[in-house]
Image (cartoon, rainbow, N blue to C red; front, top):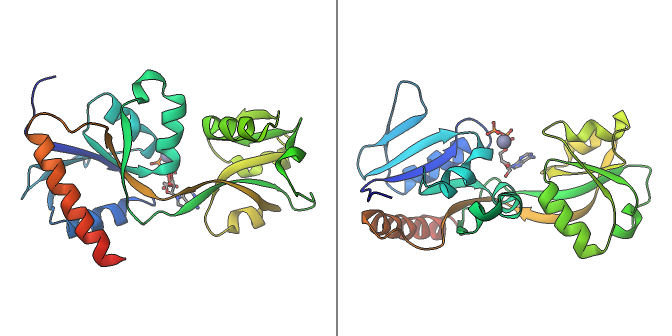
Length: 223
Ligand code: ATP
Ligand code: ZN
């Protein structure tokens, strides 16, 4: 790949991580001029640019070398590492960023008296995270059916397409609204800085080091 002298960060275009990510980058001293189509933000001070995309596309963009770094939920990054094939191997979680906290959890109908994972044996579990759920089920020695859905996972038990779900939980309000309750936690998640295992050999390596140093300062001040 040809050497590049600007660092490119992928982040969520519009969603829960957008505002806190922009805020964090601003506190790292990075300012941007937004392009007209709002997909690309040109870095004004430092040579660091942004690409605004769907969060699900972020790990793939880094793996393909389109972007150098990404700000994405650990849930999305971990799922990609499990299901992204060989492409996913060189991806690392460089820093936890302290916002976008949530849990990837098993939730069951409120009337089910859940005590242990074994009770899920032979049941169908709906999720958008088949990689993480499959890994957890194997670790627990539970043989359950995984029903992969792109969205609206929480209504699957009501529709009869699954007996339980594995989904992101923050306050638990969505679960209660669907007569479900959190039964087990698979993963504690927050936004992370995702990037390559090894620093790029060109100027981007120095820029990444500078960014990490500033991030560490900002995160320490906040904690
Ligand atoms: P996109 O259009 O980018 O695909 P999305 O609907 O997948 O958006 P959001 O709902 O904005 O994404 O969530 C982005 C991230 O925020 C999640 O991947 C997760 O890491 C984090 N998050 C924190 N709390 C929650 C929650 N209660 N539900 C879903 N995601 C949450
Ligand atoms: Zn998404």
